[in-house]
Image 1 (tube, one colour):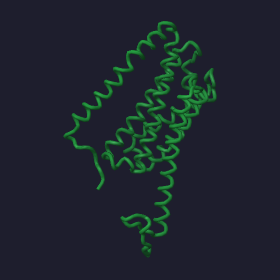
Image 2 (image 1 turned 90 degrees about the vertical axis):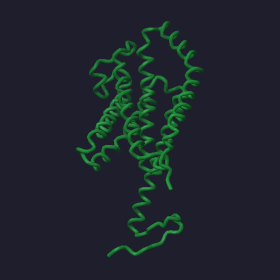
Image 3 (image 1 turned 45 degrees about the horizontal axis):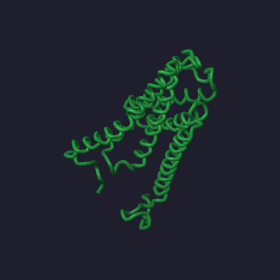
Image 4 (image 1 turned 90 degrees about the horizontal axis):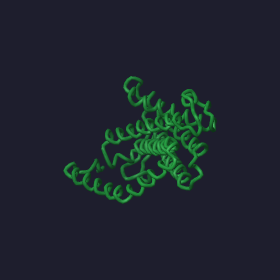
Length: 244
């Protein structure tokens, strides 16, 4: 029997405990963080757009990576043991949309950053940037690919399941492009925490994708040979004749 979610009667308790945990974390870290940010802004107010665009870039990457990981967990049906599929699918869609919105803010803030001025055309057109045009262009293409994927969520009924799935594969190219963009053009990419962020996200996505491919290959092979696995597992599977 699969676990299909927590008891609804414990919802208030769970949300209450989560709120307490978040409050403790924010209460313990927010004052120092706010003082540090205010001191930095007061000393260099002209750099505020630069700080904001860096923050939005990393938040967008976290959301994109989370959406990719969530989608792979959905496709491998690992999440089915934790919650109903409609709920997890909605969270997957929301993460993708949030990542796209944060990426749009990240790009828009480039127009307000006077350290390396970007025109509207340079923000919108890939490989036209005045700074690191190749790798900024890769990030711009990753944004447009993410835009196509997010749009496919809302056009799913119109384009059909097959086209929706085909468009969804663009997510992996968007994730790869966003990772390369962050590593090669990000001003924080030399910091150990940033490198570990990109490395960790790439490893998790790579492992889940490999598992997904191996699982799909094994399913196809069993279907082709007529091997029908029994509930006890693959070691006790029986070979049955295919239908003629």
